[in-house]
Length: 340
Image (cartoon, rainbow, N blue to C red):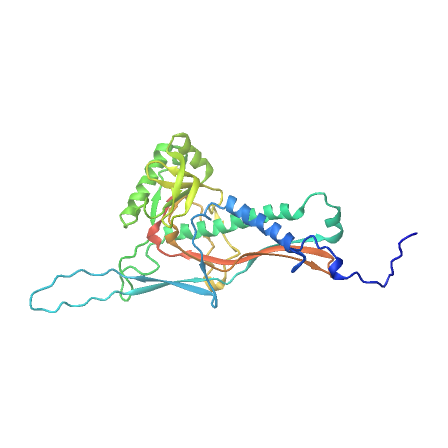
């Protein structure tokens, strides 16, 4: 006898199995969001060159954060019978503005989600993770390059009302573009740059200086055995497994295609509120040496994920979004090698 189902009957919710729901409670797409989000986060962790080193400050209740710098203290001597005079320390402030939300978004037509043989969420998670990793790394490299080329500190240079003891970045200019493929000349250029930074009380081995360069330059130094495989522990105790280390200086080396090149304009994070801070001319940038102390970084919305169905478009929408920012801070902790 055929089973008759009343067209007007409603299946009780208690009898419906939602495969994307955890423990049959809550969001019916929870598993899908988690699967996508975990893939994005995993890919960022794997692809981002700076993720192990960056310290993001949370920014809540405001669109800006400040970093304060206290000027040098002065040592005096005590003279018998005289009260020692007090000296003042000027205080400077550096500000980071976060006013942009960036995102990735995909529409998955309802019919196609049933007819596709692969899991689109996994594939999209990989692509979105790579895109976000590149975008975030480049934002940091842009600001590191700007910090390196700061003539004066963002906190002032001992001028009236501004704290002393802070310095600008350091720059070493190559003799010719051909030096990039000469390991001896590149070694000397990096050495000269680090000397300039040490003259500003920056110690590469203690201040977590990272050296970033294009893959071609990296392999030139690797072939000359200037770079070796090793393990690096940051000053915060973060262990970076499988790091490549510049043997002579004890600094981790990053090979990356995300160093800014040419003229960067209309960057997604550039706004009138931050003075188009992410735009600039990076045509001569060959390599960077910097600590994350050189930058002030914060996030209002950490990278977040969502999946929802739109009845108007009859499509599933998968997206990620984040609101973060970075600006030069302690410029003396940044240096750049430039082409002539």
